[in-house]
Image 1 (tube, rainbow, N blue to C red):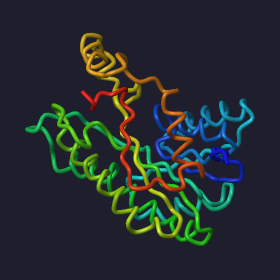
Image 2 (cartoon, rainbow, N blue to C red):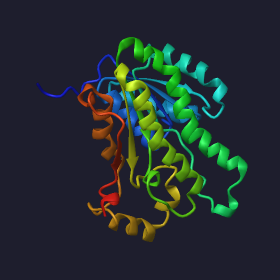
Image 3 (cartoon, helix red, strand yellow):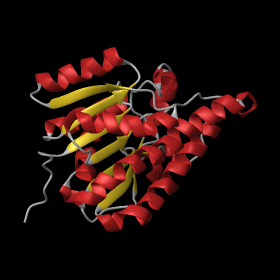
Image 4 (spheres, rainbow, N blue to C red):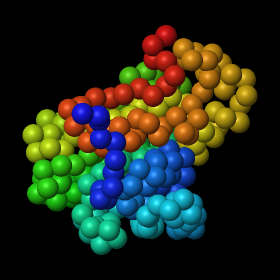
Length: 253
């Protein structure tokens, strides 16, 4: 029997959907038949993304929200479920990277980074788990990083948060996969996003990074589609607890 990549009848919630990786993943899920809730702080950009999805005959709604206030996460989860019904698929794509030298990291920037990048994915997922358990099926897709396993300059706090995401993904798997809820993470290489804008403004550095991949180029947003759909669909029913590097072979060299 062929693997099932269809998402018709599934409801997805994508955080960080205003731009970059999250926005691309939301579009991919909608094209595969899922009804998608796009969550982010900037409503105008969310509405643009919704319009793009609807123009391609997809089904989406915008959910403007600030995830940084963890006390609001139960209410945010409730609002998300009001859009199309209970959430089947959660993609934790929201994140922040201040790119500070070690000496410039403050308590505030540290707490902001660890809160949004590491704490929110867990506490938001936990709000959605009861409904997934009730159906015996669910998908959690976290966004890890090259810095989940490698150290980059000016990335101490970000790297700590993304290293945590790797272990969080495994711990989620231990806690929830027996209930039919798989938990995996995508660790992207260098893709054109708001977080990587400083890199993409430096052509020499960009070329150097491309040369470090096995494929010989940096990522393009459409490269996310296949892995996202695989991890979100019944095709990946027996895959859980994995951190998959979508990096053109950057970590293989």
